[in-house]
Image (cartoon, rainbow, N blue to C red; front, side, top):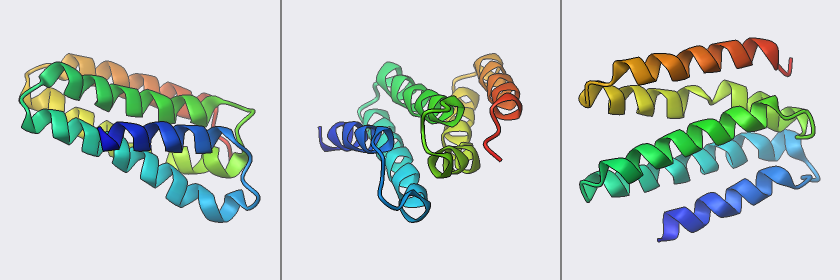
Length: 121
């Protein structure tokens, strides 16, 4: 699966120290999110709801974890905070269509609390 390998690649890139993180951070975070969402879309087309939810949640939690990690460069943390809405909206759409809005509200609350606690600004 090509998208899964892309997710692993961008996940490794977010761990390493970029020579110019201010310029590379927006594209790096956006590409990671896009790889995760396209993997979830692939499983949605194959009617595999469990793996679709897994990749949506994995993308969301990885972005949330990078935002809270003080060892990650501030530019990447800032981009994770600014682009957190993308996987969150995808999860909202998923949970609304499967009548599990309670799970979404728990994730939204977690994101709200952590974004206030670990705001990189």
